Image (cartoon, rainbow, N blue to C red):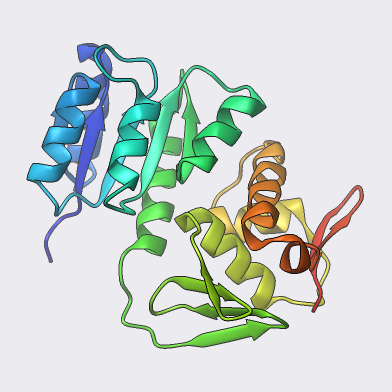
Length: 225
């Protein structure tokens, strides 16, 4: 089986080498780019790239612009590498289609876990299954969501979060349980990540469908048709 190919984009050579060597030792093929323009060029010259690790602050073209340009043509998973962890920056990234964040400095083990989780959900599984909850229909094989028959464009993580809600509709889900099942590992208290994703998911679904995701104060969320 061919190894997944990852594009590592960072203007710091030391950081690129550190991440590159770790990922190669864990069975991935790795391409590198040292600025935003090179990242865009490399990606479109290598459409087989399975995931992009993308730094935010870079010369020539920053991570936001790189993400925006790639999202015009592709839904390849993107994980942002950033020292900026304020909520407005996360919301900006999610609005552009970022799938996850890794805050610098970071653990290479956590980075690898995030990559594995995102790839596991983004690569085709050949599964043919449709699930529904009220006006929401999810085509898992096509990785597409419909609200009242109209397609809704979600990031990979938003899609998996909604799928988990629909598959567990009517059940109160704690933030810890959501993290463990959707992200596949512990965030060690970073429950704000869920709240940020839910906020964006509700917005994309629209008022009627978004209101089906109920907040359970002090605990988490519940999906109700």
